[in-house]
Length: 115
Image (tube, rainbow, N blue to C red):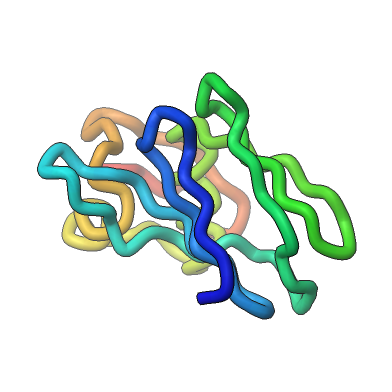
């Protein structure tokens, strides 16, 4: 990884390299989850900043992107990236703070239910 960015509330950490960015969430035990890959393309993230309320992440590469850090949006992104719903173990591994009662429909994983 070439750069690490931490949200003001220390809930989120972004690790970025040449063409890859991993967003991880702090678990109740203080350890960070494995996280989910953000689809940043081939451009290197040069800078990133979290909003003070921790609800969004702004990344700067060849373009500026604003990412919602709302849990339901991240869950949709995880399913879309995987092309399917995640297993219960994967949810615990990648998004440990997710709410067990959530469900949503996503493009790329239509009708997926989040455990």
